[in-house]
Image 1 (cartoon, rainbow, N blue to C red):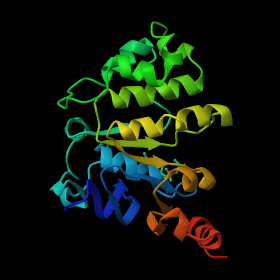
Image 2: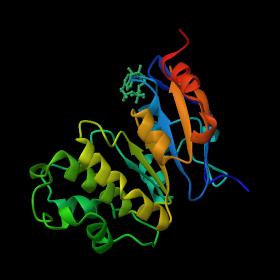
Image 3: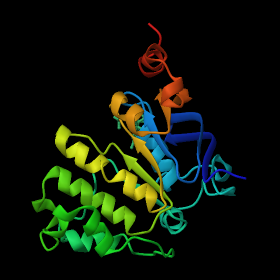
Image 4: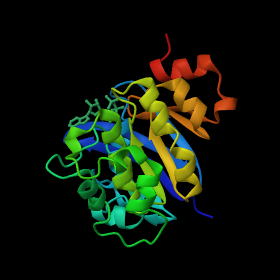
Length: 235
Ligand code: ATP
């Protein structure tokens, strides 16, 4: 059976600058994978490619065996693939609740997520539902961004650098939501710069460097020196 999501020799460019050079990745239903790598390795480009904010060759990305590489972002989202973008990208003039409701726009899939279940997952944002999103702390804004993506009832949740700029205790609260998101039926891809965090939470890890996957596997099968070499390059 085809994987839930697959990239096959995925290439991506910004104008003349090529950022991805043939990335192969698979995600199965129910899995949580982590993409790690230093600044500029291409992790965000990979997420944007899958989410359709960067267009690719049609057969570079497959969803349940169907080519989706050239689909625009709304069509990718309608297939059940949602992105929590780096930097959150909330709508500053909208309230928390209005930001969440944006996630239902164009939703075609019935599923477990609604305002009620998102507020249940992140009670702290329920208390602030009528505040402008910008009045919230960074961690709370990240919860809104995750909630907005969940409101589309995704079967694939792509999370780009959730931890950026957040305190460890806040990061812990956000990661605590993942088991429930998985139980509710979503497979998850996280981009994470913190190697230890990635190894702790993911079923499998992909390490990228300079637009290529340099190492992948289950955390228990990867040794630290191999990860170090794949992340920073050979010395
Ligand atoms: P970071 O952790 O810094 O976000 P990353 O692994 O996510 O790094 P990308 O953001 O995917 O890396 O960047 C990969 C390469 O593409 C880098 O060399 C970067 O400078 C370049 N790049 C990223 N976005 C653009 C853009 N909009 N226009 C041109 N080049 C870009």
